[in-house]
Image 1 (tube, rainbow, N blue to C red):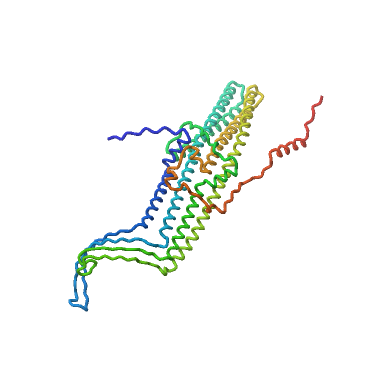
Image 2 (cartoon, one colour):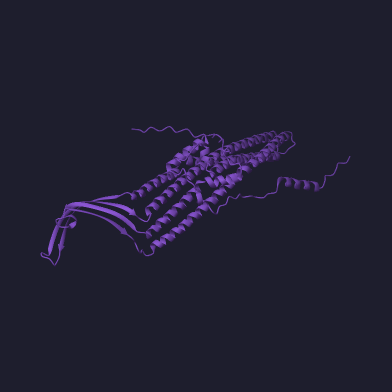
Length: 474
């Protein structure tokens, strides 16, 4: 029976929809989710140690004895039986309690790793989505540049054929047309690459004209201090390392329990024929409380305690490193958002001025007041300016997404959530308390630059000191 082909889903045309599909189908996210679920089950495995252990056994056998001091010296005994044993742990030096605590901290660490992976996946999707928009725009600009150069080439070619143009101008126009065609080919190849990356992340090809994401700037921090504080407080990667450090501490306490005794209560009851190899015994019931205390273990237990102390220090080091990484990411993203706004304003003025100059050059070229080289240079300069403006515009969108991801707000801003609610993982009231990073102060990176007013004043002084042009004679 033939299998019907499924109709492909429509391409996601919004960043929210693209991110939702990526989070639902991303193998790394689902792997983290399964790690959380596995860590929850591990706690239940450990908790089983607090309940009685019940073992059933059945035995069928034959015993052959030869004892020289009795007569007859050889004897055989057929035996069978069934027994039930119940063992209850009474005391183990808090080893089980610390083991459950360790596993609970590991569960918290897995949950925060899921949050971090979800947020980073959302950021990567935002990067791919914005890059698709960017490359679509750059292809449009390259196409427009190619068309303009094609028009100029056709005009020069017509003039040469009419005998009113120079052959060198045609060669120059052809060279610039070839460059414009090369730029178009490069931008088209770049568009293919970002579409392939988008397909890897989302699982589907993007829309031909993805919609511009809106609202990314609404939840941005108002100051660098606020950005840094939010990043260090909300970053799930830091929280994951704190939970890992607490897990290492709990394991250290579990190691120390090896120096304490272990107490168990055991009840065993059985019945059978020649039960337990005792002639004519039919039933046997015994109960006991046993204490087992290891007095010497080759110094292995002491070495394990020292080993765990180093692992705790290592976990603290990784916590501080994660904090420093988050601090750097937040500082760069916040600075990019602020500086790109100024850059876009300057590039906008640049594009408008070059457009006016290009139009004037074209009019002057038509009446012979400008050379072909002037016009072609103006076209290339306008293409470069428009390209720089488009890159800055999309860089600003990406910087906003990076800032939201640094403060763990990107998925929330897109109206999404992690694949598992915090209540399901049992960490609604999680608090870093005294385990905050100790080598990661909230310090902003400041770069001292010369104020713009001082630069303008310096330029004015150069103008005043420059030789004045000679006045024309009357």
